[in-house]
Image (tube, rainbow, N blue to C red; front, side, top):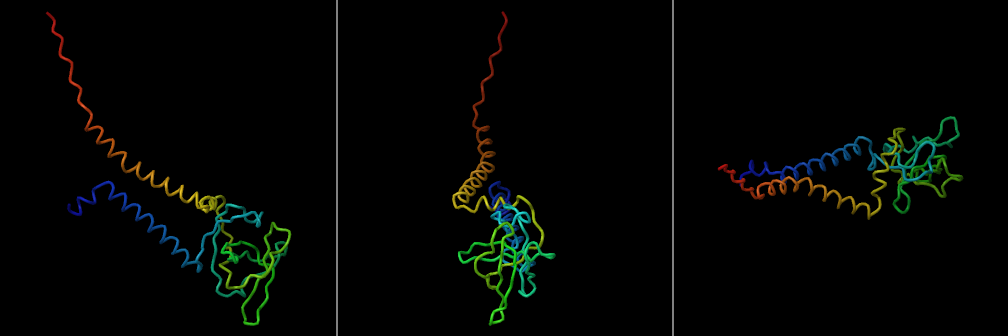
Length: 197
């Protein structure tokens, strides 16, 4: 079979489309990562700890921070509140909290005290600059973060893959099945004409 004939087949066009969509998503993500200087340029807020500034389910934009001394620290009630930073906790979870205090370590690096605006007390311990993923850029899309949060659970990820596969099969094979059924339907013989005598 020649390439032009192969490219005309529905399933080949679908595979090309799926690969193209995946490439566009990856290019978009890595492009954002490059532009904003962080591995996580978009992040879903996973808790209520930063309300009323950020709500659970908000999708927020993050920028990388090259010079940690540029992170402004202050409480939420200050005239100019401190920057909201994203840091990776010891268990790998990303936390979005406000930087309320800073200290310079003996080796010249910075550590930050953080506090969720909706929490009664500051977070325990200090966040080292190596744990800082980025700074919130005051841009959010409400509710859109609920999509990745819904699929954070392994069961939901499997369910998403199964649903996508079923949808793909339905979209691809329904027209083929329909065409095959139309060709295989027996042709009903026509009624003989009645003769009037």
